[in-house]
Image (tube, rainbow, N blue to C red):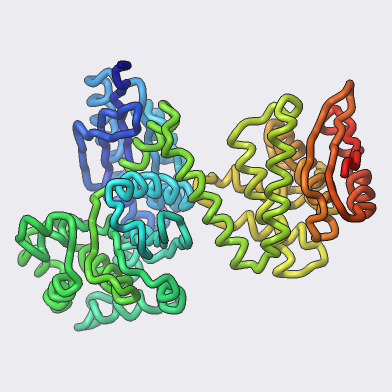
Length: 513
């Protein structure tokens, strides 16, 4: 019997409120076994959310802490580690200076991830947890991840992702936004609750539709909240609704110094305790759940899970891939796309991509770009049918699509931009700014999407089957249909020249049925 492989890896989270590093043993099955979890508070988020820039002293402190983390990594002789930063650095006006200082002074390259990438990593950590909690999977589950800069909410039903939203009401951000009002009112908690409600009120119309009975909480210093709610050992990873309410009633009357004194916690924890409790309580009230389950997974867990999936190509990769596609369909539905047509174009585009791999020589990542673009190519019609391809570009460009970086999102938006009338042109700013490799990716995936769109120009899904065969420099698209496809043949032919220019092979359509 083959012995299970394993590797020791490290994940560093350069967060808004703390710098954290987890070192863990990762098995070939994707199991994460923590060995060390290091923590150091930081003022990165406070600086960014208050002043828009990270202060020099915070940069010095960050570099010093990261040097210490790297020493531990070297002591372990690790080859696999990854460092990411979130809203604290991402939203700072001087972020490029900060990242350069970190790299120059420590040798560590920190990747700035957007909300969508952060959501993807957390979804991996959550999936890892949920696989061990099968009792949750047969009912609606709301997952509320309270971060320093914002709150990520996700709704699962029967193991499938149904909804995901990011709201800029993070615990530390709220503190900094409302800081000037704390000394001007005797009811600061009430004021904060009113402000939070104004930002999340729209969710009261959405969440009840999912009949949510399971509630999973992440972040928001839940460990502290659990300790303050109950001393019982059996409550180690959960909080009853009434316990949270009782804690809120107690905290509601206390100032930050009083919270520090009453609960014997640090100022860092005390300042984000109140907004975290209010947020958890507000979302809990929108559900039929009576308990907050706290798996204590973090962004560090998600990073390690992602590294394990890449290193060992685990079975779990498919589940998280399905989450990405589910979130994309949620966006499409928000913009009232023709779901039947989009599903058909998705299917044809994937079939063409898979059948001509030896010609386009692109990989699984590019396949994902095409699939997302195929689903969302017509979202621009929500704005206007005229020039809807341009509107599609603009809508996609400013979405948070799970797992996609800003650069990747721009690639997908460009593919959708050129699915209809125009072809990529250097006079178009959106295409010109792409680098050489990205231009090739966009053009290759665009011609596939345009051919797929041509084969359903009538929106009647007439073609039942496609087989592609190469002979010399020609690609024969053999199609089976019981209906008149003259319009589809005409549209296909009108896209043939551009396809041949990009792919080097002339596409020819042949009817077989």
